[in-house]
Amino acid sequence: MNKHAPNVVPDHGAGQGTLKSYATGFILSVVVTLAAYSLVVHHVFTGWDLVFALIALALVQLLIQLIFFLHLGNESKPRWNLIVFSFMMVVVLIVAIGTLWIMDNLDYNHGHTPSETDNSIIRDELIKP
Figure 1 (cartoon, rainbow, N blue to C red):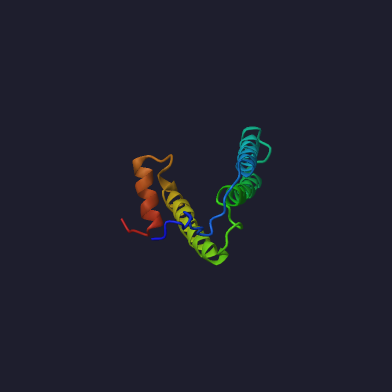
Figure 2 (cartoon, rainbow, N blue to C red):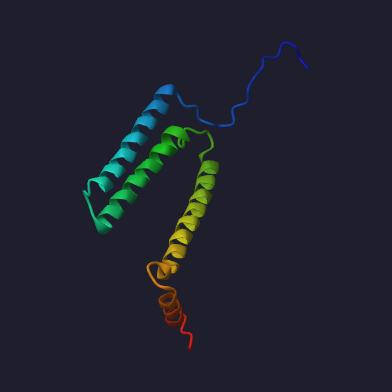
């Protein structure tokens, strides 16, 4: 080992954030979160309009997180980050869609007496008594 060689920390292509970028990301995240909260609390939209507004704000929040905290776009090997990001999106979609599917399938249990639940299961599953 050469005693004159400098101590070098290898750069693995990860972008480094600054205090300014972290502060900007934090402030933008708080603003988007408060905007979503205000839309719901003050009944600015109702029904599907509210759902679409919240989805839009969620996508903005996702972009803020990716750019300011995960430094997506500041890396030296963007192809690998794209592959990892795509896999993460597939997993998130599976979890989100699976959750909504399970909640929809369990909806027949909400607000029914046990006999009404049995009747709705028999009707939905085409079971002959």
